[in-house]
Image (cartoon, rainbow over all chains, first blue to last red; front, side, top):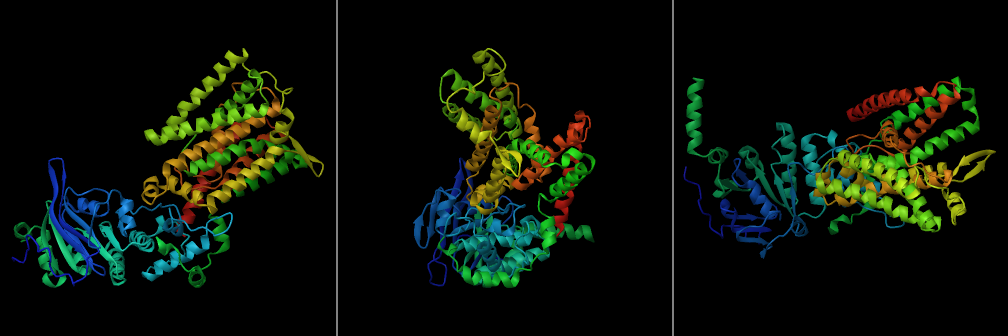
Length: 274
Length: 351
């Protein structure tokens, strides 16, 4: 019951490698409102870091700091062991940190391959430098099949794909364009059980391919299935920082729901059911 | 970003293995302009049967001419609609351009080409203003361009009366540059004994270039993207503002082009012309399969839409019907086209 680590050690075991991304006592205040305080977090290559928290826990603020949309007001953000401050998402992207937001940034009516290369289109080497459609189609297909998404036709509008497939296309796109660290903002939030499975499989595939994955969710089941390392946020503070071996799903769920609060809740609901 | 350099030779093999060739007929059927093409064929056959004069090659040349002046504008308006915006000022912008070129050259005693160049700058400026205001204020382009439409209409009338003292500009046919400008914008040539207006050639050229840009360049990809979902487009690095302003300016350019045709065709310009033509351009684009909400459509579709307009416009006369019915037919066709296009698109989405 007391496996909770209120303040994790800065040099907790990390396999001896330099983390791709590390947060040291990072805090963020908006005026007099403290959104985040003393967050410590490490993202290693080939690992999934699950960030859990209920609504308003500070998950969004945290990813906005890592992805360069906002700047921290306290503490340090380190990439490859070097302290850094991102002024724009572009700078984070250049460092290989790509964020896949919930709305995915896809254009529903456009074909899958056009979406995949949108903004970074391949062009032929000679005049008149028209789009190299075949290469883009082929590349899209290969990149998707690498991650186990079987699309017979990349010419269909991306809006006709299922939510899980769309999520996977967005992730595959980030991977293809040079991401080393993938930040997935609640990728399973709007998905059914089966579709979530597709995305979770993809997350595992990305991890095995050596990417550092930051998996933001409020679903402890999903986090426990793929995560190697969990960070639990509650009201802007870090409540938990542990590895997969140190925690069970039940415990994670309980912590997530607020520990004692959940017990009280189940007690209450249990009485009603009886 | 260095990973973008991929081994294409290897990928192509995979491509050939895995992509199931979609049924060619089906692939053709789900193109946005398919409904319009079928409609055009039906209308052509109908007039061919009921109107004997319609069968002559001269009649076809006349139909093509009527289609071309609408078609050049419809092409630009279609691109703008694919990019998710409207331009209600497109109709009067045509008159605005010809008035500007005519009066500037006449009153400043300039070569007509110089007047035309100044009018081009003004037409592009109107397009830029439309685009800039839409992007800056985030107010729907329908309202912004409704405003510029009324303003241009007022300017056309007021400035013409002020400068020329009447509602039409004086003839410029004796001024320097007339012959060459007329050759470019308003001449005719003979094909197999039939006189064809040069705007037909320009119309086809506009359509071909627009089609190439839409499907074979990154700018085309961006046009579809800003029309389909501009926030997503911005998130992946598409310069949304530049693309939209560019599209409005292309409408301005096309309006100038058609304006020059009218000027060098008739040598005087009626200042009240062009009002309500903007709807014809939009109708042609919509009949051709463009979605009002943006992100979908083709330039070829707009050309077919313009051709349907030209056929109906002339066909009613050739058939000896009362031309008062023209607008009724146009409206009925628009309704039919919208319903048919919707059905085609739903069919496509199910595949």
